[in-house]
Image 1 (cartoon, protein in one colour):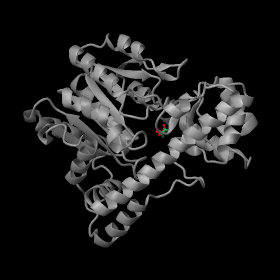
Image 2 (image 1 turned 180 degrees about the horizontal axis):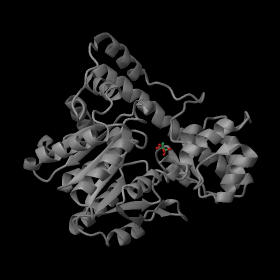
Image 3 (image 1 turned 120 degrees about the horizontal axis):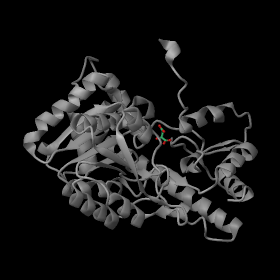
Image 4 (image 1 turned 90 degrees about the vertical axis):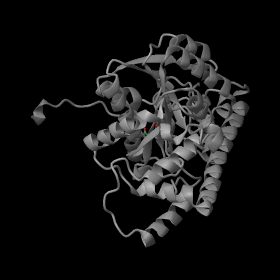
Length: 394
Ligand code: LMR
């Protein structure tokens, strides 16, 4: 049996982790995988997470199973964080999942279960694991234009023109905030225009939100999602706690389904629980429990929000520093987009050859499409990166 297997393509983002590790140069800079790092290069455990872990160690007296959907308190706390009451609770179903990727996978399986013929529309570009999972599940997919390579902003006319072709029942995957890989985001009026279009066509929004709090703030980053939720009868939301709680390895995510009517809730919830049972039975609990404790305890929540805000402001400051340094070196404003983008990532707009030269000649690692993780920088490495970017001719 095993000799029937063929080698699988390596994930382009995860591949960089090993390449970076294997590079002996101590001047190397890692701007690859989307993980937040402080100025010392550490991905710290957040203070509120440490405090919640300490409390949990004291009070937790069993590790028996939770429910198939996870702890209902986690679902409630996350629904509140994401939706803030914009949808009545009796229209919401939710399951805890292993990370945001688990939520995406379960959402796609739910779509396939309900409407196997539906096409899932993805932004071009998008996080590479989106098309990879859809292809693996044998589902239909299509792309809509998203990024304008000239302005490095959103190609909104292209987006609207392409999405005009969606059919009723198709699913449109949108990044809730901090678009991965480009860093270019929809404005609120643009979210409204997308909602108008989806409403008219009868397509269903599926929002992947993995960076709430990393862009313009916790509330601001959920504004597009809430606008959609208020308007659309049906919607799927895949959320991750990996980044905003810094609990990457705990695999903490959630899938939320918004139903048009309260009467449908039990069936939708049953299907979500069924999918959990088929794929991995009970979802992981440790990270979800920490998140619930933090969100429900005013002191922990305040400290978490304060630290998240420090993280966000640090990334914004790095963006400003890099854009300023590139303005100085290039004598032009052509890198100003770096300060406009939001979240961890920006697509630099370098060619694959220039990305390769940055890696080979300068030990600077970014994804092949020139996606940079801004959080991989610090005040010392910003000028080094800027000089290298100009040096390779970007
Ligand atoms: C990324 O895009 O770098 C992160 O979401 C990590 C991953 O799993 O790819």
